[in-house]
Length: 135
Image (cartoon, rainbow, N blue to C red; front, side):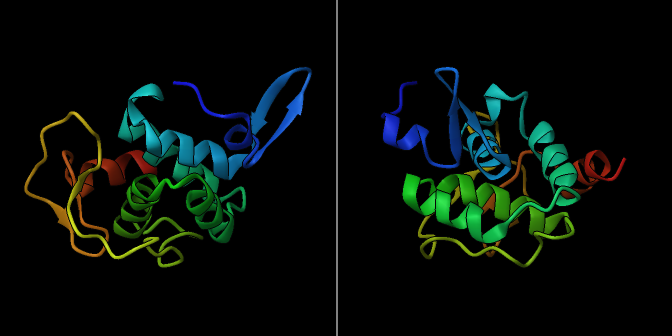
């Protein structure tokens, strides 16, 4: 997947000809394409770890808006609110009011759990991912 250089610069710095993402951009990248980081459990674990690193909810929202990555922000919001991840739970809002469901992990079969605020269908039970975050 290729992105224009202007998009690559959002939340990143260029060093020795490569872009190095900051924490918020890395989380959004992971939420945009969770299959590239090992799945949604890896993202949930990363969000749990990021909460102790001072992840900035306003910066996450700003980057999502600039990159037009509403679905990525919805996945993050659903995870942090449902799993009560300190520092982020209750701090995010969808960029626009959702009008249709999205899958927490695209390409996976959704379970019966659906986040009503973020309109995200989960293929894992919240308790399964809760265990990953709070190990």
